[in-house]
Length: 292
Image (tube, rainbow, N blue to C red; front, top):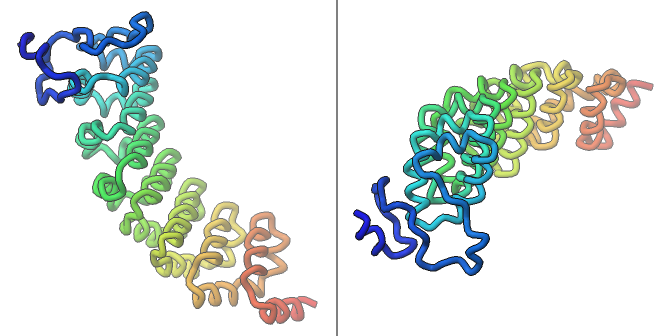
């Protein structure tokens, strides 16, 4: 195999040959051999990745490897990518590799069936976010499909909530918007859930997606009560700003009679400002007359 290996033109991919020739110096020697790359200890890459210095070294060196060395490193790391994504130091390497297109298939394979668990994991969530952000949107959409049915559960988790925000931002996955809409009140009154409601509704509005089901949920859930809730008030603000005109009118008709009460409430006052911005002068005048 060595003879064949040495004749291999620099940069040619070696498919499936994990035991390709020993890492011999690259034919095209670097201009300054004194600062040549550190020797990569093939066979020990997974344990290197779990070491703070080793992880940093691999983050710096892997993107610079010749194609054949890179393929070799990728094949060696592939079975460990899932475990490394949950590791204190390993996660940084996988996040870095996520930005390299020739790693995408290996990472997608490693994450398959584990996406929900990774998204709700302190380190794993960061890696999934980096990966989904690096993928073309069609590939990202395919990747997040396994989260269908689990969006609320993810949205209520500290790490998962950030993951859903990023995943929706990059995929505009219709199922994510539907699941948020179906659970909008339950999510809005929770700290992490409300972050997801705000982010998903705003991104959906930017993409011209239908907010009607989500706003319907907010109206049915007692918009006046939600408007003065410490988390849900943010969801009401987005609904007022971005919701369809007829639904905004319904919300205003319920909220405006409570303007004074909301204005003097720490959380409701934010909503009161949006109400005044969105209401017609006549609507505001009618309310202020009745207050006076």
